[in-house]
Length: 111
Length: 114
Image (tube, rainbow over all chains, first blue to last red; front, side, top):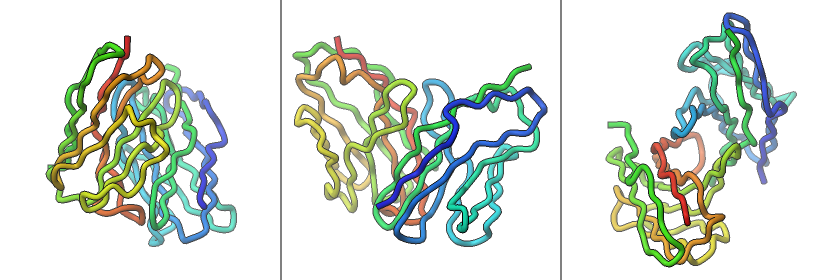
């Protein structure tokens, strides 16, 4: 069985400050992990993925995430938030069969 | 072409209507998915097709009926829906089921049942 927990339902940052969105996972197998972003009334876009290669993964739009097996975490970070980053972010765990979504974190960026 | 195309973008239907949602991809992906997403919630898996065969049906009511005519197309037939079925319906595809292959999502169909 696998599951994913996003530790914050809502994160608010000021433009130009760092972003941290937290994700913990549970999986019986070596998981693959993904972060997706969803802007209002849109589909989901892949930001980045971890698939047992490098533990620090770089994605699009300046986002990156670090896989920490000892902490079962896959937190998403960005050094400097932009207004266009305001959206819903989903952490996803995938094993041999299926993907499971976290509950989502809504990121608000204040000017 | 890395797109998953869903039609229509918006759909309003009555509880006695029959309608279909369509999804198309030309990436050669062998797994295709239907998700239902309510406001401020994550997508919920409804159906998974793998190599054109239904492999997962997540206890979805029979008023939702999926169909995979070929490896590029996925339909969701709707009949006698309830107002609580109003949601964003997302289609996705991936190279294969699970594992390290990412899913590509369409823009969704916003369904309103009146």
